[in-house]
Length: 270
Image (cartoon, rainbow, N blue to C red; front, side, top):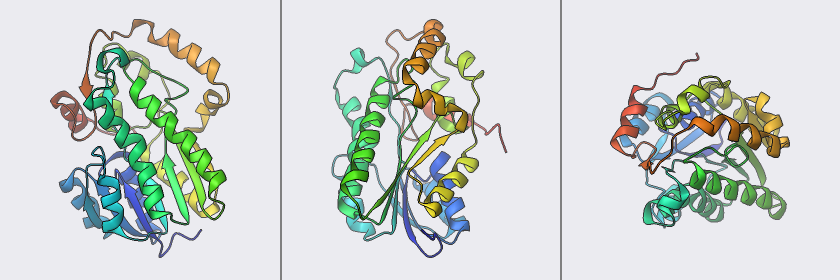
């Protein structure tokens, strides 16, 4: 699919992977529609790309359908928005915060797919479902659900090209948040990390060449192919991670500690 001239909706476009992808697709001639919760950061992206801005909180039930109505038809939908709740699954259970995280990471992407039905859908999932980490159970479960829905949609929508993007560690503000979990930084610092601009280029190429899957960084593909091995390694690495009853919201609208970590984060890679 040619990107030049295509109308593209990117959710979670205010920072990280979404921001990098907005810049990349704008450079290839896309007509961008960007959505996220952080209005000021969306405006910064729009100033560079000329994008149409739609502030929205996709953790709220019904917000995705309302966004689809506002935006109207698009050629490409990129479901990138994601954040969650860093907490033991048996501490948060199914409370409102846990349900809001699932709304953001699963129900809203599915709602946008249903309402817009564009010729191309790009869903950003995660390697987390096959490499779970302490306090990330709810997030991993939601991304696993989106991954299965993505594969199913590929079979159910023969007239729609569906791409799944599966990031491992990427040098974005999310890394700063994960490091708030006691004991995690020592492990994460040893793992190879990719850059958001490079992933954005990979996604753009996948759109143009109509590929079905992007695993990034590529060296993490064996973890996806052999999940039992990957999970065993992660269990060993997580032995010294302290979880207790730690609970904090992540994302641009997260708790104070999470927001401070995001603001202090600086990319380590060009």
